[in-house]
Length: 267
Image (tube, rainbow, N blue to C red):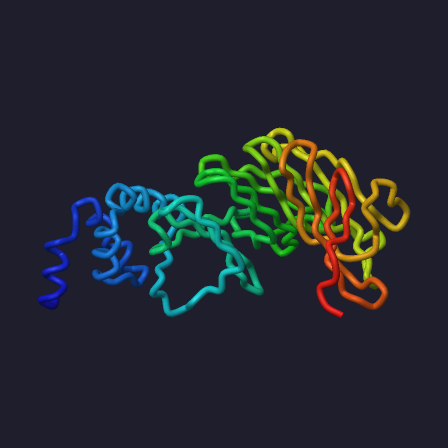
């Protein structure tokens, strides 16, 4: 052990010391441990240790095998969620210490395999939803599995009869919407989608609207892509989309109250 290591050991707070073995295994240096302590991890370090026991090894910023992130959402200065962008199996990560370390919290299927995450929606430090249509994990073709946690540790699971999830949005722990792609009519500049609503935190989902080659009565056209859904309250929401109109690429916002074209993106 070098003189620097001895000095760092002597300055490492007791709350952080129990993590050192796990962190060293993950490739975290003593400097990183001291840095975490100096920025006030303290009790969070104990929480990170507990999360490590629950979920497995911690991922360090200094890891040589860098993981590409598709999205990240920090809910406060210390706690945040991230979704990786991997061709084989995208994962869900959680940080308890401001992004210094990341814990893989991806749900497992019934066989104990880690699922591949297609979409993630986060409400706060404990509540989140994931969508997966990972057939390699044993999920039936033509169904999307929605996973929900309200404690940041355990995941509930429910199947929705949808080809794949495009977007999920919750306005509170109970009320949320799912925008899902469907096969009926999609292709050649068209995209069929269904909108599902949950009133119980994602335990059950009811189809409330949709558009297909045979039915466009809800006001949402079949033409163009549909990208994301968001709601302000229980009755006011929007879907973003876009496509070619008169040989010009345009962005479109569809509202639950009024349908509106925002304008041309490029010519």
